[in-house]
Length: 291
Image (spheres, one colour):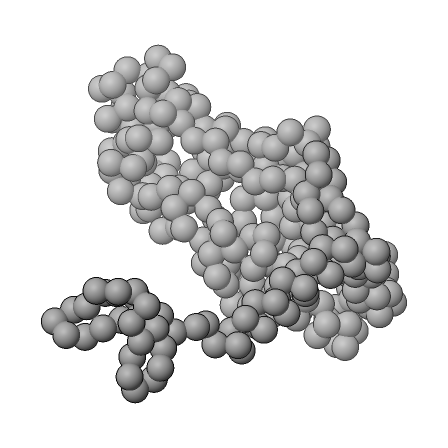
């Protein structure tokens, strides 16, 4: 079949291909498509010249019109910072009682702090500060390092077991792994800790009580209710950081625990940290409000 054959209806030449009597036309590309391709190519060339486009070894071509999205974003941020400079300055400098006594300021702080919490804290402490295994719940009244805004600010600034020289330091020894206690002693101590929800019995001379007094009271106290400033948990309530079942307690005694919280003072501004301190203080009141 000749490829110069023409379709009698449309007048277009055929390609020479025939499928069961259906012939393929060699119809031209529509002019609008050609125009579209031409315009897009011209636009691309103009954009390459005018706008930032081509990557270089350690930078990129800047373009003739000087458009820089990074600079534009920085300008937007600076403008936003300037618009809230007055109340952010107050958050950074005024004492907490004065801040709490200013409803308008607290309303702004609450709105902003909620976003800050979501961006920086929620990954570990979960939405609403409900916490989870290994991460303290912030929405109750149980605190390892203090629950006032002032104390929370200190924790936020310096972290827990962080590289900051003023960090809170707390570490549960690995009594089993490091050979401090034998496996049978670990089992005995586990069973004893399981009974502490009923409180410490005065004068208890059982093996578990003796092991507890010899190894645990430095952080958890003689009454097992924790020692302020050590990070030692209260073992007589139902609130457990890692779990209060026998298997988890045994693992804690065997391998120890050492939770880490970052120091935020080099990551967030003073105003942001103090805003978060007020917000977290509010979470413990059950309202989720920074007030």
